[in-house]
Amino acid sequence: EILVKFKSGVSPASVQAALSAQDARSVGEVPALGVQRLTVPEGQELATVAALRRHPLVEYAEPNYIIHAILTPNDAYFPSQWGLTKIGAPQAWDVTTGSSNLTIAIVDSGIDLDHPDLSGKIILGYDYVNGDWYPDDDYGHGTHVAGIAAAQTNNGLGVAGVSWGARLMALKVLDAGGSGSYADVASAVTYAADHGAKIINLSLGGDYDSQTLHDAVTYAHNTGCVVAAATGNNNGPVLYPAKYAEAFAVAATDSNDVRAWFSNYGPEVDVAAPGVSIYSTYPGGGYTYMNGTSMATPYVAGLAALIWSEYSSYTNDQVEGRIEMTAVDLGAAGWDQYYGHGRIDAQAALCTSDLGASPQSVAFLADDETDPIPSSQTVSVLNTGCNPITWTAAISPSATTWLSAAPLSGTATKTSPGSISLSASKTVTYGTYNAQVVISTTQTTVWGNPQAVDVKLIYVEELYKIILFPIFKNYSW
Image 1 (cartoon, rainbow, N blue to C red):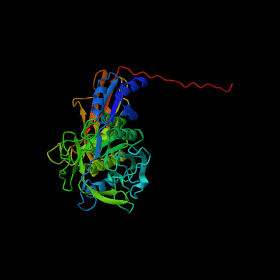
Image 2 (tube, rainbow, N blue to C red):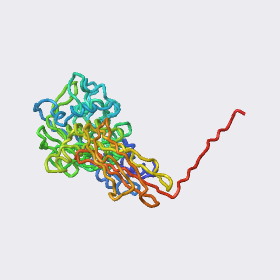
Image 3 (cartoon, rainbow, N blue to C red):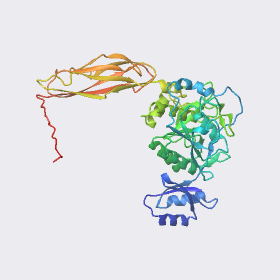
Image 4 (tube, rainbow, N blue to C red):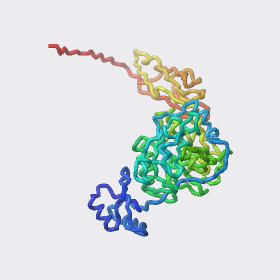
């Protein structure tokens, strides 16, 4: 099979003529991307792609590559779910256990729809392998991934998921052997983005670049999704789609915070997560251990759901940024190609203080006869995180003479914000003056540091008052 996208405005008749000339027949499409899926005579795939790329009406053409589940089987037995403790999930759950308003799309081999630890939270997506609306799992990989991200928790049964509350959208793109096509993955990714999933988990990978797959990941990211993708398991370069900038690429670590020997690496790695001897759900109502960046990726997907549950106004880039900023630095100092920004830390991601200021701008008016109006204004120093923030404030430029602020230091907690009183004086000539009150902290693990509040003074010779009287019309006549 091959994938082709015709240029905008090409008529159906012209499309059919171009396909007929290549003995190609349409067998499906990726509607959100305008990409057609074609079947061609066996052995003619590359020649047909080359011919279509030369066609003036074609935007691009490429083979419909095969993608695989990223899994390294291992039967070793370790204490179950060490990964949750390692990333500080129990402490994060003191802040939030996750919202049922958030959906994680599991684009994989399907999910065991009857598994007692999953069934109550599954949203049926689509089975692209068999062409039906029953995305059950006949391989096991997708069920395992789903349990890591969001198994039912605190129910006295089985395992715990990172996000207790998140729902799971089952999208089957891998067959009973763990393989599938790029076209199906692209279709599933765009379906998830269009049907309410905020997080898309891609625990799969392929060796080849694809415009169709890249466009699908970009589409989902631009829709506002976090697209978490496994880097791969052959101790080599990062696979696709994790290699794309719009994906959030996840490497794997072991229980000692050491890179898993199989974990792929490179400049695309964003973060790492537990991926060795991970215990989770398995078809038939069971549980088993698996290894792989496939297992690391749903830890990140689940954490993204927790963050969005607590910080609902965040964009996808802010969610990813918070995961990166709060990760535990491993390997070489700072970002590196093996761990990215480090191993994820759910406790820090949920509890890290978040500095804010409200309002973000204030203004004063004054004339020769009137002191600045209003006489004072208050700025609140906000903290939406778990830990107190010790803050300081300074006026910028420091030579500003018309603005006063007090106090210039304090503490802010989630329930008790700080407060700064601002006042202006007429120590300048007529004109419009601008300054800032910059609020900052020396604490290194604070999001949103520093905050700047814009302050304006408008000083004129005379302020004029305009009085507008209301006029009422009697319609009872």
